Length: 337
Image 1 (cartoon, one colour):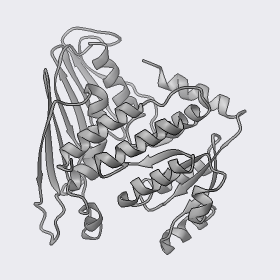
Image 2 (tube, helix red, strand yellow):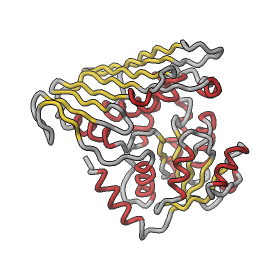
Image 3 (cartoon, rainbow, N blue to C red):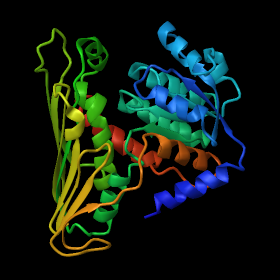
Image 4 (cartoon, rainbow, N blue to C red):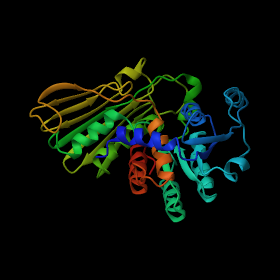
């Protein structure tokens, strides 16, 4: 496995001399949008041209952050080489499609589409036009997940037979309508991040069985208490996601159980990784140990990987074929296939 820390340090030094890559944002209302925009504004890799956002309050917020407001035409038909799609989930597919049709590389917030047909259209167009398509799942460049995937691929955990993931939150009533727009509810909105990690770890499952319930005392249809079971030839996985847990961040976790030991990330942010092995393997001794991790900030790795791929220095960490497998698995877990 590539040493990502070494790669990102090398990329940072090279980017100081390389021309900045023009980037524009299509939408800025997603909860991840402002942090990404600020990173691009201050980046040595990217030249942030501006953002198209229609909400008046958000427009003021971005203007106050010295981010230029753009029209749709300036975003999609202007000089940007890459477009970051960061609006509401319902707009992800049409905005990403328009960007690709305009010949732009795309970073699209998760989930990138709400149908399999739509995702296939994005992937096929990116491949046809030789453009990059990167989905914005949070933990693709997370040092804890990187080490767990490395341990699994090298057999240090033995034969992996069970994966368990939990990602809960607590949202107020005002946010529930947007999350309830899609049948998958909480699984589609937040469980997606751990499904991405699961498929990168184990590949596509042979069967997915979801349980999507609405159990909060709200007058809406948001499926807010969800579980999906993923069957593999020699393993099973369970991903659980709900909107009903106070203080949920500290309990978010990802566990990988193998015949030689267990790897656990808990909490996911700021990440703590423990590995407990029956017999020492790879760089790890036998017994329970807390693994040192490099400093982690959301989205930094995504943007560094995207910039390097645009410059032709390396391929994106997740291929288009993997993007399709992840999306199909997410839709199956959300009862949206």
